[in-house]
Amino acid sequence: MPRAQPKSNPRRPVSFSNVGKRYFPSGFTKGDMLRYYVEIAPFILPHLAQRPVTLIRFPEGVKGVSFYEKNAPGHAPGWLQTFPVPRHRGGFINYILVNDAETLAWCANLGAIEFHPFLHRVPAIDRPTHVAFDLDPGEGADIFTCIEVGFRLKALFEGLGLESFPKVSGSKGLQIYVPLNTGAPYAGVQPFAKSVAELLERQHPDLIVSAMSKALRKKKVLIDWSQNSPSKTTVAAYAMRAKHDEPFISMPLGWDELAEARRRRRRSALYFTPEEALRRAERLGDIFAPVLELKQQLPQEFLELGEASPTGSRRAGTVRTGAGSGRRVAAGESKSRPVRRGAGAALARYKAKRDFSRTHEPAGDGTMVPAGPAAAPRFVVQKHAASRLHYDFRLEMDGTLKSWAVPKGPPFELGVKRGAFEVEDHPLDYLEFEGTIPQGQYGGGTVMVWDIGTYELLGGSHAKGDLKLALHGRKMKGEWHIFRIKSDPAKPVWLLAKSRTPARPPTERQDDRSVLTRRSMARIAADNTAQWTSDRADAPAKPGQRSRKTPPRKSTGKGGARKPGSRRTGARRASKQAGAARRRSAARGKGRSAANRRGTASRVR
Image (tube, rainbow, N blue to C red):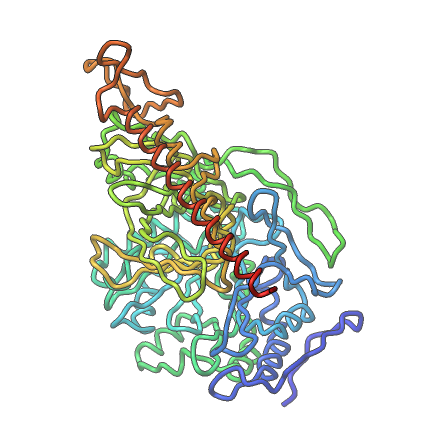
């Protein structure tokens, strides 16, 4: 029976290429995928309309290389609509808006098998239209376990007077949406989602986790509440997935259908091929439509939390068509940023390891506040000469800096994985900490801000132990992947790898220069600007106090002579050693240059 086709615009021609290319091991081709998206357009488009979308492209099929596409390609047609979202200082991500069948087909022809929209629509990019819960089964659990957890979520929501709607992810889990459509901000929605997940974890500790590594959630289901973020996307209803050897669809179901599938243990009732999805949509219509229309309010305390948190600064956004610009859609003047709750507890280990009357490391007093929803989160890499030289990699998350020690430094070539040992969270003030930590204190030695910038979370989460990142620093520019491996939960070990394309590593000189002050490690040690000292044993510095001036110098004899091993003597020794190393390196370079000239001359002769 012929299916209804979406209306096309003759002024927006879309050409298809390589339609016979095999995209799935089952034999499903690119042409089959294109046909599915053309025919499902009337059902999927309402769930994509006016939402910035991340495409996951598989130009050679699911067994080939895949990558995330956020920015509209430069070869996009002139009629394609986009929306600029602030990315980092002075830049934007020019997201595609899949508002019509032609745009959907054009994106699919790029090899975009998966479409992942944000929870918000433009221009209100601080306000999700629904709450999303992603139920992910751990080892020993399955989709039927997810259904059991889904019904516990449903019961909790009903107790709050809220309706919820499920869909299978098309991978291995379940997703539950709670419609809002009332303008609630992320600042209230995310704490609500987190509270729900943590409450159910406390009530059902043998079944549910809210934040735990895969190794520790065997036979349990993770309720991933972190999707409720202005920087996160979730696969769209009716979108195809590239998770198996054959394509399955992220398909809405009724609660009664889930109950029946669980009762009969019918896995086939939970996985829909493209052909089955099309037949079902034609028969039932869009049963997920209430998610777009139903208006519901969060509990009042979470609404108040959202109202109390100032929104991040917003630059004006414009819906754009091709290279031109359209109407102005959003603007904001606020420069304040929301301060997240709960960072104090996360910094307990950090504070327990330090004596702030002896070290001038930041005490975590909240001087620096988190980036707002519109601003990109920040990262820093600090070169740290402690008992052993290493690099500290830190990401701004949940009001603190998630931190890893990387002994060999970040990799810049593909295929190289560097061990990254997770350490305690650090306060946000540590982003710009550079100086010395007194010997005898935790991490005593010299600290340099080796690189700093912003990042995008392309996929994964810290809770899942898998973070795909796009870094926008001065030395690290491009995509990296950091992921947890099986290790002692008390001492988690991760691996840091370069992804997608290699990057140019810093030169020897760049490696020994701070991006903040241009100082070398030896100069930072000599300046000794962040190390505490006192003229009197009975006059300790105040905890958390900082100084940018060189501490008072002590003299111990006539003419101000210093004892061997004093700070000035040690700094002079470090400076001399660094100078000698540079001279030796220069001499070796001259020797190589002379040898090269001699070799060239002999070849010419």
